[in-house]
Image (cartoon, rainbow, N blue to C red):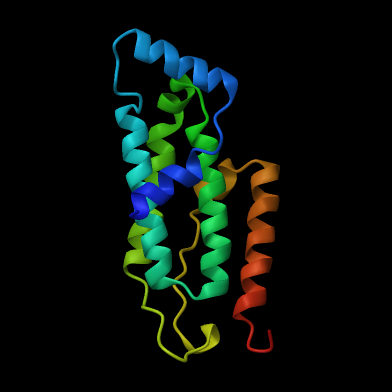
Length: 155
């Protein structure tokens, strides 16, 4: 099974009863296609990011990154259609930028430690930082601290 199949499996954990009812209603209406175009695009983006993690990040950062990406995409995936449409452009735009950044990252070299490689970093714009909630700032700080722990030579 390819990465898209894995992505679908990771995002679609056991469906809730309401999701199952929605699928049954969709089938009854003759709509054999359950996945919306928006979700299909998100699924492909998610799979692409996982592939980029595999090729660009060292194992500890890849594991942490995969877990974070899975959590974010699952949260988006579980939104109601109206809410998803409202947040889709910002969400997909930010993750597309992340994928572009990873695509330009130096590839993981054999036998090199994280400290010996160039680490791709993108500074957040001041406008972006101002729009973050306190919870998002705290999450960003925890993420930075965890990454710093991986990239320190004595770690």
